[in-house]
Image (cartoon, rainbow, N blue to C red; front, side, top):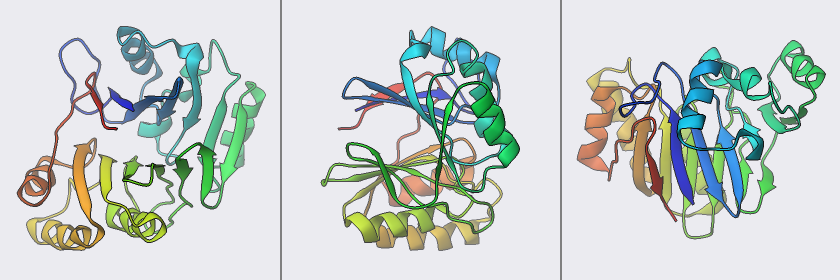
Length: 231
């Protein structure tokens, strides 16, 4: 699987950056987009720079309804709206109707769902703010793609570990930028229970938490515009 960070708070030279997140997964001849950043213009710019055919992207998974994860969606659909869009059950009817009116196939998720081979959606966890995570599981490892981890990344890790019992790779935003040292330490101790193999901190994780991860886990820092192979 090739993973590309299409949009993130930090980027390599030549790519647009901002507060938000978008990740492209490429495997089995599929281009799957997880979240769409905060800006349609910037998302399309980065996809074009990466030579990604927008028509080839399907499905699109949206982790939660905040602007920094949905901001590029309607621009992405402007030229080709015939795409499958997976959202959680908490998304507003207005948002859903607008997608349907543009011709997209809206799929609301409210439980564990296998959306492609080895690719799953978690139920929406509703602590703090409703959010779902995308999971790739190949029976050797579980890769968790998290948008912001409003319900806490350790909560996502717990339900994934209970379901699959495999080592976990965490990729995404972990919403720890406003946590103090004590809180970060507490959360790291909780994560240690779930056989964390590697962490790729993005977006809202924060520099302090990212640094602390390097003390306890294999941690790789990736910026917008960069790609890596994971399986």
